Image 1 (cartoon, rainbow over the protein chains, first blue to last red):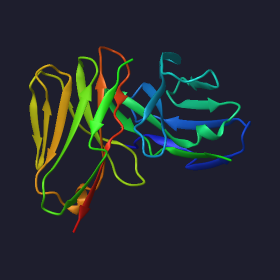
Image 2 (tube, rainbow over the protein chains, first blue to last red; image 1 turned 135 degrees about the horizontal axis):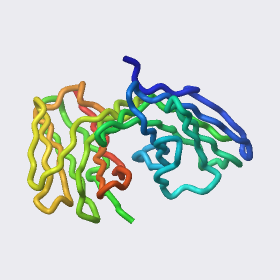
Image 3 (cartoon, each protein chain N blue to C red; image 1 turned 180 degrees about the vertical axis):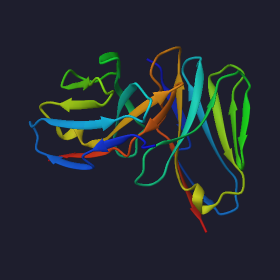
Image 4 (cartoon, chains in turn orange, purple; image 1 turned 180 degrees about the horizontal axis):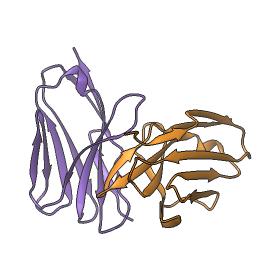
Length: 110
Length: 110
């Protein structure tokens, strides 16, 4: 039984560019959440998707958007990248309130 | 908004010593969860506490939830090098997203 998978593992982008990160939840999980983890900080909630809709959103600008597909996989899109967007982006699927995190995508913005 | 504070930020211990990290919330929580993140890894769920005054043990780890459901602690007895990592508490109010603390980074000196 595969856990949560994310791609790519690492990514380097330039300021102003756009990026798409991908996530496949753990088998049987239908809810996907995205978190941003800056170096030395705890994960910060970006948004959550359930039944292909954004259900909850954290304090992130509209440059951050997402999508969930019928097979429950999800994408995180970030437009007009800023240096401050450099972080580890974690996807988590959930069951019973417990989060199962993927390995993350390390995004570096130069 | 809801905030979760953790202390200490860092803890260095000799192998065999005990370790405790504390978590405090600005609001009364519905539940609290603890996660461990190894260096270079992703957060992994350890436990969830729901009831006021609840105490749970996992081998050398003891978790407590305060009577007022606003604080929690994780105590590790006789630390080992395998305990190295960052320990995060994460609190939830109702159906709101989990809010993570900044974590306590534990180093164990052999």
